Image 1 (cartoon, rainbow, N blue to C red):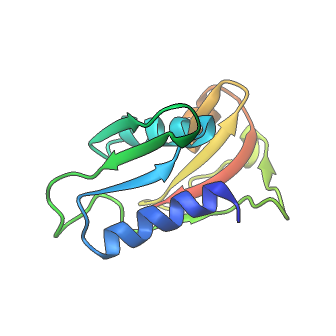
Image 2: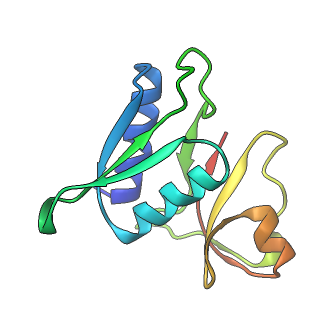
Length: 127
């Protein structure tokens, strides 16, 4: 299974179960996505735990579990079908949604990538 899809599924399932936090196996790309989510205000805190090969990332949601900041998170680019876009092709997904894009300058949203004139792989969209 794709590790990013697993991360998105764990986040989605934790929110549906009204959990306060979720743990995902650590990797650099997942940590960057978690930092992006924290920077954009979707999650409250990131905690790194574990040693050597058993590292995990714990994502702590905001304490208001009845009204979470994330309503849905969906993967667009998959290992079987990568989706890339130039900065001209990055239009706003919707008024509520935010693209998660991997660019040469790191993980950012579609608006920031258009402003910096950077294209890249569209990892997913978060509502």
